Every structure is written in C-alpha cells, then in structure tokens.
Length: 397
Image (cartoon, rainbow, N blue to C red):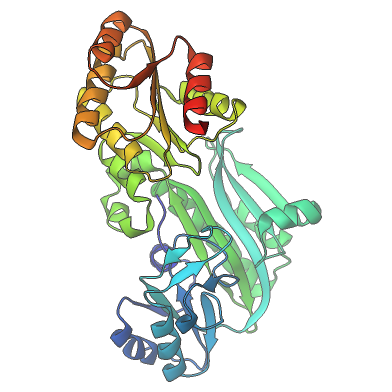
C-alpha cells in the first residue's frame, strides 16, 4: 500500500524527522488560505499522486500551464493560482504511463534554501531477508541512473535483525554523505528514527529523495515516498486510514475486497489461474505463443464459487481483454468449483470474447462435464500448451 507525500511527511514528523511546514489542499477555494498560513518567502506547490517524476511531468490540459507537477512560487497569490491550475487536471509522468493520473490533492510547502542534495532509502532486501539502507551523495536524481553511471557513489548495507540498529549505522551514513557538525548529529538521529518507523509500521520501502543540507547547516527531508506491507495492514488501522482508493486501479481494488491476487497489465488475454507459480507460467506461455497477458490473477488454492465469479467479472470488465484463458490445476482447488463459478459469472455478465478452459486435477471430469453441458461456447484444452495456442489463435483470428 502506498500513501501520498504529505501523509508520509506527517509520519516522518511524528517520528522526529525534520520536514518543511506544509498544507494540503483538496478544493481550489482553500488554496489561498492554505498558502497564507505558510511564512514564505518561497512556496512550493506539489501535485499529490502515487507516482514519481512529478517535477519532470506535464499536464494533459493546457489550462494547467506548461510547468510540471512541482512549481516554485514567490507569493501567496501565485501559490494559490498554481494550485488551482493543478487540481482536477491529469498529470503524466514517466511512471504513470500515457494515461496519467488525475490530481485531486495539492500540497503547498514552505521553500528551503538548499546547499546539497542527497539520497537515502530503506527497503526490504529479499536476498538477505534484512532491512537495507541505500545512501548516495547524488540526491534528486533517479537512483537507477546513478547506479548505472556512477555505482561508486552508492553505499548499501543491511542491518542484522538480531543486534538491530546502532549509532554506528547512523555515523556510517553521515560519513558517506560528508556531513559535519550539527548536520552530522542530526543525520545519526534521523537514521535511528527512520529505522524505528520502518520496523514499527511494517514498511516495505521508505525513500527520501532528496534529503537536503540547508544553507544554515541543517538536515531536512525534502521529499518522501513510503510503501507498506499490505499483509501487515490489519494491525495498522492508522495507516489504513491514509489509503487513497482513487489512486488505485479499480479492478485491483475490487479484487482486493475479495482477497484475490490481481495485477492489471497491458495485454489482451485475461487469465484466471490458481497458484502464483502457475499464473506466471501461464503468462509466459501466452507470450511464447505470440500474445500478451492482460492481467495476473491468482484465485488461490481454496477459492469459493463466489470468489471465482468475482474474478471472472473483474477480467471481463477490462475493455482490453479480447480473450480469456482459465487454467486450473486442482489440488486443494476443485475443478467443479471453478466450472460452477465460471458459469455463474457468464450468466451474469455475458460472454463477448473467446474463452478457453483447461482443467486438471481434483474432480476434473465433473468440472469438464459441467462446462460441456452448459451450452456455452467454451473451447476445451487438454494441456497448458494446447490452451495457450488455442486462446492466442482465437484472439488473433
């Protein structure tokens, strides 16, 4: 689960991390009042969407002006005007794709005098099963670009969960960034606070880019992204309350309400599979036979007829889907349950595209019988390769 920058900064502030003073604006008429509560003399107006590259992005609507999603203003009036231009407009960045994201929230923040910019992040390292720090003197840039061009400017280290974080780790970060005096001490304290936040709130990723050194020698978190472990959110209702469902794909949102593992993709063949490994293999073989999957959808090992029905509805709601492949290997999951769920869904939403079903495993004969006697125009498949070949042929004509 992701949250907005302004929400992330509220959490940073609660954990003692230094951030700029700011106000969130949801309605255009609130912009001038919000900007007036900030001292200035510089105001920074930031579009709030769940995507990076806002400053380099552009709006689809000409009314928003030629500037990107981060704008520097020199008066309350200018800050209010730029806020009003952004609200309700569609911002396109390298991470949103061509469709972009609508800006429903704008954050007005006090400007900062920047001496230097750094990069600092914490993330879960899957290889070591530890929390790792990534640190660089090249802040404000894409860390992937830095890693590719100047890898020597990146420091990465993990924290042993048995011994935990110590002041040594904070000093290591401060030394790497070349900080001295009060900024050095602030950095050590910041590292401790960020690690505590990361562990206590079950984060998967915390990125501060840039972390800045101001001209008066202080450290400050100028921008922040946070991603949380969705499986742990049941114990963090305070974090769940920050969820902005308007930023999520409607199909993925609907899937989450039925405990379905669904990710929307750009292809044309909808997939419904039980098991993550089998789902990935299904996607791979669709590509092998010359098409692209429209989604990753794992209904799970113990899915009910109702869950299967909802999964089918979600697939058919995607206008990109030109064909559907149901690939079930019945272990815990029974093939007859899948068949019944598919029939219920088809009766409710109709079947406008080719449907290939491959069933194998528990109650497979009963499942096939249910499908065959349904009167539906379903294409049966004997194995995964046969299923992939048939659905691609049906879609491609």
